Image (cartoon, rainbow, N blue to C red):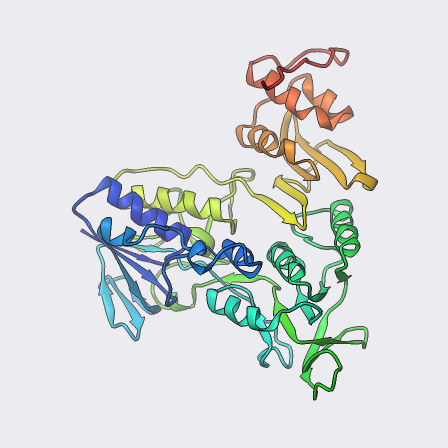
Length: 434
């Protein structure tokens, strides 16, 4: 049996290792689209900060890891797929026959259709090659413009700021990380960034990028904004979003909507073809519906589940929790599940703007359906557990509505089957760690 895995990110590597653990005799080919060992894109900001070398981004640190596990790593980019003849066509590397195929092609950065987006000095921050180019240009005092303050942009932001660059962030949405935070949380993040010396411009659009003769004006580029102003830049980093890598599937018989459609076993519409990670529409645990949950833990879950199904061990993927945890220059923010709330659901908030602490809880009946936090690092695991398990809170719902910070008590009580009755129950005395 020949298992071919297209994509050597977290989903692909997890799938290859799972197949090998289940079948010691199978042939496994792991195809990488880049000329580098399989690595994690989420480690690139640490590389830019100088906290790790390139090898530190590699998903497996042991030399010869893939050879030792009988996993053949090949480099090539997909140019087409024939699901009838079970052949995958690779540009510059011929074609590969498969018995079972996993599509783990991930996503690629969106390059907005603006004049000058392809000029030297304009880069995405998505690959090791991008990181090498950015490192050449970013420096203390150098003017840098970051286009996009979503989740990916806000991760890159910290690395650019750590270089000492004169950093300006331009975001089209009215707040930072708009798909992860509400107005209160996004406003806190902006205030925090500005206090650290980062210029933040929301509700702003880049109209064009031009070159100028640098005569001490700060950089060879000018970034023109929708308000008519222009920002000097030595480096422009594009982080306006990503889209799944599915273009090669045209005419293949694999159904693609926003991403690759899969069933509960992560099988596509084509026989013996599966999909995992950022390229596919997995199930959102909170809604039970297909969605694009482009985070590394979900990719790993997908990879393992798909691999079990590929080796003939039927495994249903029950869904992944939509969650994001972001560290922005020391301020930790997070969102889980249906953080924007549910129709007819109750909501509770606790705000301490001066201390950069915020908690918002969203309820669906007696269950916690979503949450978001700023500065509450101690509650991240608790909130995830309450939302993921869907434990009925009973009388604890009313207490959390009045005092959201009591989530630890609610978790301990409900986990022990003691949801509590009546609003006047005293605070629990929790054991102190020795």
